[in-house]
Length: 204
Image (tube, rainbow, N blue to C red; front, side, top):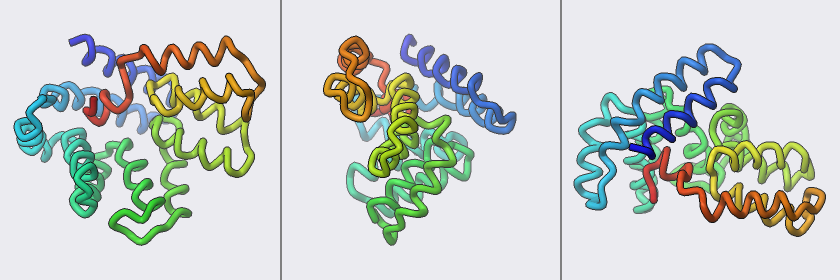
């Protein structure tokens, strides 16, 4: 129950920060879908996926999570189909997952320009999109923009962003060295159990 409440609080926090009314409506609708999808989480993956399958026609998170499990199996065709279904159901978290396929050429012709365009669409609401765009900005030496995106992702429990920020502040890489901030992000990385992957993808 605590995990479900945390999920809703985070989604409503993003809703408050988002300026677009249509985007706010989307986030509100997603927050209503999430608890049903979370009820499917089960250590028995067969039971879990059967549950997602039953929900998938009306629940975008069920579609998304079926896609994630297909991607883990390297069934990229099935994963892309599920992600596309979730995206059509207005689940913006699917956009970065599809973008990742274009970035890496999984099941589609590699198109990094298209991937970049896609993650820019959801950088302000999806921590994974923010993290992916931050990596691009670091490569192109737009460090200030990258750090802001990493902090958004980190504050929304994206573990890779938290780890990167802890390392960057410790080493003074891309940012001014700051041990206090490094320790802050390290603590969140090590101790924060409310990970984005668990909350959105249902992965432990």
